[in-house]
Each structure stands twice: as C-alpha cells, then as structure tokens.
Amino acid sequence: MTQNSEKHWSEEISALLRAREGFALADVDPDSTPGYGGDKDTAAEDLAAGAGDLDELQERLYAQSRGDGPAASVLLLLQAMDTAGKGGVIRHVVGSVDPQGVMLTAFKKPTAEELAHDFLWRVERRAPQPGFIGVFDRSQYEDVLIGKVRSLASADEIERRYGAINDFEKRVTDAGTRIVKVMLHISPDEQRERLMERLDRPDKHWKYNPGDIDERVRWPQYMDAYQTVFERTSTENAPWFVVPANRKWYARLAVQHLLLGALREIDPQWPAATFDVAVEKARLAAT
Amino acid sequence: MTQNSEKHWSEEISALLRAREGFALADVDPDSTPGYGGDKDTAAEDLAAGAGDLDELQERLYAQSRGDGPAASVLLLLQAMDTAGKGGVIRHVVGSVDPQGVMLTAFKKPTAEELAHDFLWRVERRAPQPGFIGVFDRSQYEDVLIGKVRSLASADEIERRYGAINDFEKRVTDAGTRIVKVMLHISPDEQRERLMERLDRPDKHWKYNPGDIDERVRWPQYMDAYQTVFERTSTENAPWFVVPANRKWYARLAVQHLLLGALREIDPQWPAATFDVAVEKARLAAT
Image (cartoon, rainbow over all chains, first blue to last red; front, side):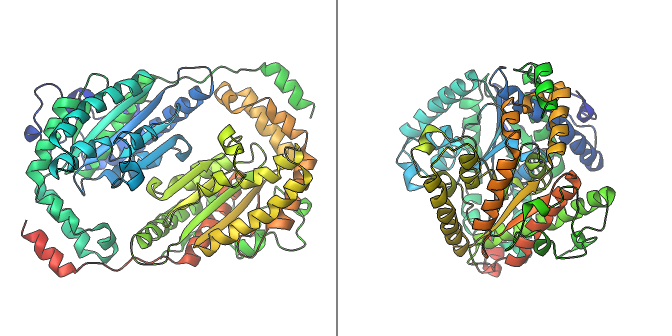
C-alpha cells in the first residue's frame, strides 16, 4: 500500500484535531494548519497523492464486503457554518473516490414525513452499507444545533437527543461502521468574505440565501451549541475532529487524511475466491 | 462555454451511434471507433478536457434547478454484457462530476419487496430529481433481457413491458428528463479475455462469479433480446445508442460525449437572483 500522502505531516492528525475532554472550540484558530508542514502548493500535490491511496483503499473496502470478510464501512459526517467548505470537501475529497463506492446524503430541512418520525429515523435509513463510504452533508447534529439555537424543540428534548445520538452511534460502530465526525471551523470574518463573494458573482447568486445572514447573526449561540455537542458526543468510538477551515486547501487535505486514517485502521483485504480458480479457467476456456 | 472536448470528432456522435429504424446490432463492429479521429493517447487528453466541460455544465444544471428555471435533469442508462465496461464508465466519466449532482443506482437482482410491485416501481423511485444527473447501472431493460432469455416472465408479460417502458420514458422525458440510453457492445472473444484476466489476478477474483459463464453461453440469445429492445424501445424521445466497447478508451470517451451532448441541448443557465443584491450586501456588511 502506497503512503505518498504521509509527506509533510509532522504528527498524527487524528490526535491533533480530536475534541477530547477539556477541548474548547474558542481555542481553535481557524487560520491555523495543525500538523502540516507544507503550503498551498505542496497541499495540492499531497491531495492528489492521497486521492490515489483513497482510491485503492476504497476498492479494497468494497471488495472485502463482497467476500466473507468483516462487514466494514466508513461514515464521514460533515458539520459547519454556511460557506465553511463542506461542498468543497465533498467535491474535491469525496469526488476523487469511485462513485460506485460512495453513499452521499445531504440532509435538508426535514420533510413532513421525516418530522412525523423520531429525528434519527431519516439518519438510520442512510447509514452506509458494508463496503461503502457514507458521507453525511449535515446530519443528526442539526437537531441539537439549529434545533437548540432556534428552539425548534424543548430543552428536555434537546437533552434527550445527545444520549440518543450516542446510543445510535455506538450501535452503528459496533456493527462495523467507522464514524469520522468533522466540524469545519471558519471565522466570522472569513464567512463575511465568502458570502460577499457569492453576492459579487452572478454565477454564485444561486448559492446565496438571505436566511444565511439570519443564521450568521447567531454565531455565538451556534459556537456554544457546537461546544456542547463536542462535550456530550465526542465519544471513544465516534470522536469529533475540529478542522480549521479558513484555508480551504488545509481543510480538504485534513479531511482526506482523517478518511485515509479510518480506512487504514480497517485495513481491508482482497477477499479470497469463493470458487475453484482452475475449474473456472477451464470452464471459460471451453466457451 | 468551452468546447475543448470537440476535438478529434469528425461527426455528430449521437447521429452515428443511434439505433434508428433498420439498425442491426450484428452490423456493429465492437473494435471500431466511429467518428473519432484520434487514438488512445489523444483520447486520454480529450477525456480530461471533456471532464472540465462536464463539470461546468453539471453545476449549471444544478444551479438552474435551484432557481425558477425549467426543471431539467439527465438520465444516463447503461446496459451491457458482463465485463463490457459499465463500471469503468461510471468511475472515469461519471466520477469526474461533482458527486453532489449525481444520483447513481445499481440495479441488482430484484428483492422480494421489489418483486411484489410492478417492474417499473423500483425504477420510478430512482428517477433523477431536477438538477441531477441520474445514472442507472442496469435498469428496467433487465426485465426484457435476462427476463426474456431466462424466461423469468411469460411471453405476454415481456411483450407488455416494451410498451410500459415506452410510456414510462415518455412521461419522464415530458417532465424534463433527458434520457441517454447506452449499450456498451463488446465481442465474445473480448469478454473471454477480460474474464480470464479476472481469474488470473487475485485482486480481481471478487469481481468474478461462476454465474458469469452461465450467462456467457447464452450470448446469441442476449444479442437477439438486445436487438428486439432496440427495435421496440429506441424512440424519438429516448433513443438507444450502441457504443463499440472493445476499446475501453473509446467507450468512455463516447459516453462522455453523449452526456455532454444531452447537457448542451438543455443549455442550463445560471438562475437570476431571487433577492435584491444591493440590499443583501448592505445587510451583510452590517454584521
């Protein structure tokens, strides 16, 4: 297995970015590039090298699931304030993987049918099957983020949800899914610049929504809600990683690296043939 | 809009490959490269150039669907004998598109739930939403291909299905979906080589199934079933394209080109802002 994408990383990124006990979101500098010794140019090269590694690991993961091996999968869960770069991560990191091995879900405002069920109902339905890399663009955490900031549910209900999420994630990881939870962290100033760019460019207007500013003015409440999320749901089996995201090139590379780490821990293997190779060769040659 | 990917094509590919009245599958040489004046090397360059065009067109298609514009989408439907290269097309052509704009479905052997419904039930559920490029890896045509060759349904039922498919596709195209139906056409000798390679390589064993040979020996019946499919379902609104596929580089480039053609005919436009840009800039600046 190639490890080209390991260049320029001084430390184990999963340790550096993990939200452990005592973690404070306020201490994270969104401009920083923890653990990475390169720059924007080397990052482009490293991202391309990492795409090759990801490609092979994903194919092995898928192949392993077709055989008698363990039923492993990966779930990359992305949360962030608007413009923080979820879309770019999906396009440039997830987009380098064979689409046949990816199960992507963008969770929007819940539909009437979804609201008629428990908040985890729609999430459970999109948990990745063995062999797949599942990707959640937003997730169950919306229900304790906007849900809390906007008081869309009672305080008791929000409280219940942290435990329900932990139980759910424990079950899913026990069943063979490795969960990588990522918050892309930008600064309010960076967001203002990115929103302004959307307003400046007619080909970006479709990405802008006046409601984005209504959320933006609640920035401190959102950061508080995220802080509580990290305290309550960054568990041993499903930890949170906070990725500084003012520099897009760093955020993409870091998420790719976390994904690679999860796959390398699974260490998927080509499955053994479930048929007699010599017999099949003879059958084929006879046709 | 760039048109870099137009190089080396001497004629309109959609006209060249289309299964029109009088079309005979037996007349198609799987080794041929209709309309393309380049070779394997230029094809790699052209595929990369086409990926750029596809990228922009897909983003426009998605953006248009978010505005007040027409609710357009594209459906690429792939059918082929085993090893003909559906997977490679998905990986190398579809894989170059932002995954956020793609809705991929691999239709397998129907489940008990699917069999309890009409054969089009599972297909309808996966028709692409506006703004998306839907991709079917196998499709409703399995029900008149393997369904016919293996007598999984009565002759009357098979007969009914051609009409049901045409009605369904007419409705879907009337509602704004452009359907591109592609059969990747290889020769039996080429398939033998490709299956043998899977048997030769331990990292490819998982792709091999002894049942592949059971289908292979029915090659003539499958070709007959395909011929009937083209005669009965290559309609004005949802035509079939038969792509010679012994040369993988040609098949991938040709499918990309057909996809580009469908998107260019839609000619999606960036939607106008649904808000007052100056007002929003002032709101943003005040935060």
